[in-house]
Image (tube, rainbow, N blue to C red):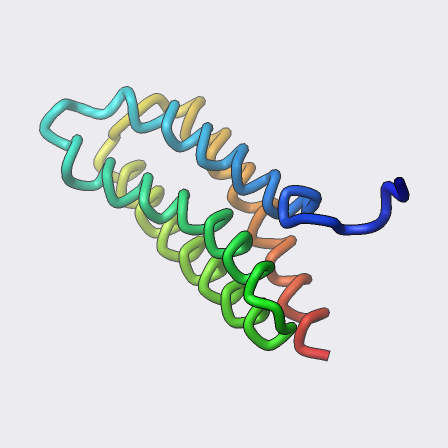
Length: 122
């Protein structure tokens, strides 16, 4: 089997990085106060999960145009997550080291999504 052939969305590094992001986000938000469980914590988790979920859904839609649409949605969810992470930082929620890990993975994910959008638009 050729390692360079994409057989599934699971073969996409951008999807794999998205899964890493979700794990880091869940680890970060578990340190939030209990009263935030249904507030910002929940919103952060939903935005994080949306990234790899939209990549997977778009990949299975069958057309390049549909895939591009869902990758753009994932990118928008990344922007939402960036904002929510900034708010959490301003409110001093969670462990700063875990926040840095989330931010690092999210930055890498956003760069990959940006490049992917450019390549799919061609």
